[in-house]
Figure (cartoon, rainbow, N blue to C red):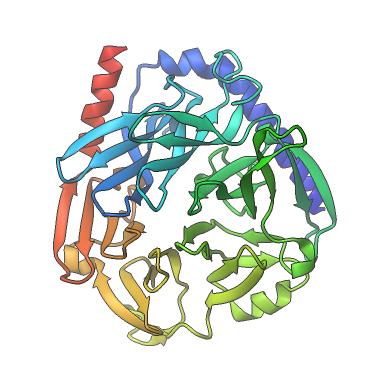
Length: 418
C-alpha cells in the first residue's frame, strides 16, 4: 500500500511540475489581491552577526488560498541593519529560487537548496532541474553545484505498519525533495535530508507527513581520477534505521556528530523508538551509531498553563552548539525555550518575556552564545516574522530587529531594477 501511495506522490509531483511552466506567465503578470511575505525559517551565522532568512513571497486570489510566487534567501547583517537577497541562479521568478540555507562553521560558506521547476527557463537544465543542493562562497560570490538532477539515488519504499523497508527504489535526483543541508568541517562532506515523495509541497520544509532519509554527499575521486560529489545514505539498513518521520532538522558539531529532530524512526528497530516517543537522536556518521537524545522518558514534564498540571510535551526545533555542549529547543506549545547543558534542562525564555504568543524559527549560533527566533501568531500565519529577536545566552540581553519590512524593501528594489 505504501509503495502505491509513494508512486502516486511521485506522479502528483510530476503533474505539479508540468503545470508550473504553464502557470508561470499568469502568476508573473498577476494583479495580486494579496501580496505578503512568509518567513519560513532562518539560519544564524557562527558569530551571531548574520541571519540567512528563508522567505516565500505569496499571493492569494478571490478563493482566499495562499500560494507561493517566489522563494528566496535574504542575508541580513544585524550589526549594520542591511539586507541583501541572494540570487545564486541569477534568475528569481515563479518556480525558480532558493531556500533552506545553512552556514558552515567558518561562516564563509552557505549551503542551500535551489528550486528550479521551470523547463522553459534555460537555467533549469538537466543538471539543476528540481530540488538541488549548492554551496555559495559568501566572500567571493562563487557558487558550486553539489547535487544534480541526473544523480542516481537508491531510496527505500515502505508498507504501512511495516517495521522494515519493503525494497530499494532507484530514483533520479530530479524527482526527490531535498532540505536541511549542512556542510561538515573540512568542506568535503555535506549531510542533508531527502524525502521520496511530494507530500503536499515541492519544498522540503513545507511538506506534511513525510518520510525522509539522512543522506550524504562526499567529494571523492572517480575511476578516472577526477573529483566528483558521490551520494549515499548515512545509515545502512542493517543498523536498524532506514528513514525518519516528520519534519527533520539537523545540527552538527565540529567533530562531525549530528543531532536530528524527528517524530519517529523506521526500520527493524521502529517499535523500540516508538515506545520511547523519540523527539531527537544523535548520529555518529563514521560508525552509523544512532542514540536517543531526547524522548518522553529523559525529558522532564512541564506545567500546562491551562490545566495547571505537569504534562508530557514534545521537544522540537533542536539546535546545537558546535562543541556539542549546549542544545536549545522549544517545548510545550512553542511558548518556551529550554536549554540543555551539563546534563540538565534549564528554562531559558518564555514567549511572555518578550510579549508574544509562540516562538518559531529557533536558531543558535555555532559558538552557542546567541539564540534567535521570530514569532508564530496563533491565527494569521502570513503575519509571522514581523520582527526577529536575538538573545545573548550568558547575559540574557534581548535585541529586537525589524525583519519583514527590511526584506520587503530589498525585494522591491530588486523588482524595480528588473
